[in-house]
Image 1 (cartoon, rainbow, N blue to C red):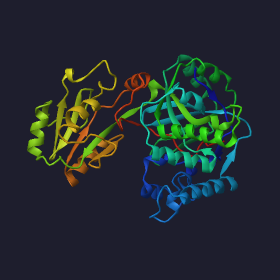
Image 2: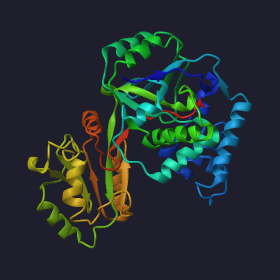
Image 3: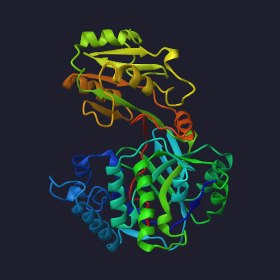
Image 4: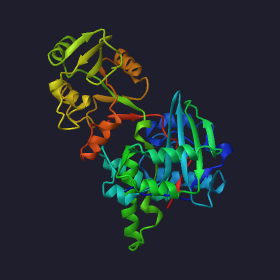
Length: 407
């Protein structure tokens, strides 16, 4: 069973929602965030990337950064840029990018169900990034960015969604990245609560560190209060759950800065000994089982033999896992993708073009993959296993600052 809970959202007035809302904290670096927020003092980037308002050399984990986040957050509240709903509600959130559209349920989801594995993970988290989210949440007493969840498509929920979006929306605007964001406020949440109770599981698609941070917030608040009744707001975290068949996954590609001391000719020869290699290949694979490689100004197709997969293990049946086992470790000497500085990750729409620019300008080699499917992700989560680092890029992205959950 999955639990959803309505809440009194803190949110911008409709007429300034577009100006307040921002990209998530973890898809831009400091310089990019500063540029996006330039000339816009009410951008939510001042809350989720507050280092843009501090000296450039400040440690992003310095106490001053979190204190600045709180200062900026309270300024938006005190100036009525963000206003609190008087009545609890859930929200329907539709994202439209080109001809793709997806609609999910924005609400509070159970930390306890995350801890017990009803809300399932597929990614390892890093303690330093967990610490960052924990400190940010505790300093603001708020969840400022939603986790992206998925559930197996359900006819009852789909019918509820289609019925509920017939009314006028609360927000409807197109952001600077040409993604349209439309939200409806739903005060009668009982039908959604009831049908979610019948779902056996939810799956984290994006936002593992936010979910892990919310879990640690709960533990910290219990330490501070010692006694709780279980219904306090910190027992829940902000998320938007989408039907699995609506989510769009893009590949997370790899750029390798240097060839481990091997010449391009020798490297290509080693690769030919592992895969069937097609010269003048596709820039982006059109199906599972093909990896596109850009080397020395040319695209190649690497065709994976069927016997390289272990179909008894959902992780070992991924192209990325075969790549790790056959190329990264034995040829390039990259064992830990998270720690090795020779590898960069380039994800999202049209990322193969960025790979080409990197190799042309900096040398090395790049690899483009066919996207992991949502079914593969769920199978791995159901098995209690972990995907390779940076396996999925979900787009379009949810905006931060449209809905804030205080605890």
